[in-house]
Image (spheres, rainbow, N blue to C red):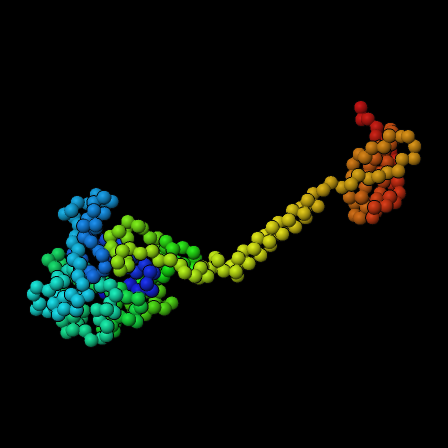
Length: 310
């Protein structure tokens, strides 16, 4: 038998996680499940499985709903030499709000026998009992049980991220919940079809409202300021970069060569040599090379005629 603990504050998804990931999967495999989870209904499980899978009724298991008082009875768990107990060998036993069943470490001897000698309680198929305890904190689980917990699942709300439809699951080895024992972490999304299989609130299924939106990190002034400042930096940097690119790609201003007469003047080519920019211009039928340093024409370097090679 393995003992698993599912913990989390009210509304964190711990009961939902047990129903969706533990009870439903075991039910599909034909196991017998004993639980005190409020509002759980076997017929709803049957209808859900038949409508969402290719399983038949004979493939499915059974669910026995018990009360907290039933869980405290001497004959609730099977024990050495017992006959006619509520739970049978090989059952999956899921107990919600374990602090109500075992308010202290005063556990009945028959219950201690079951928890300590679980390997002896197997059914005809060789299946051992599995015990799942659900509580708001692992510290509230009786030490006799806690010392034998194989894996602890901690459910956390995602309201800080503005999501009321998701929750996070942290998985730890043993009953110690710290960074050194953390082995996995994943996120789950609520499914209304799973909620219909049980009742997560006393009375009718309730809706939990957020009474103070400041717990949502996306609504905090610090986050909004950070987003605004980040957008300003992004757009400012983009504008500056585009300005530099545009400046570097502008064509050089044409050379203004004073015209001394009515001859036609035309810029032929521009060439950079050191600090001097060389301009070749055409004046009528003649060509000249003019040097330009620091935007001043320094001299007419040469005059020449281009002769045809033909």
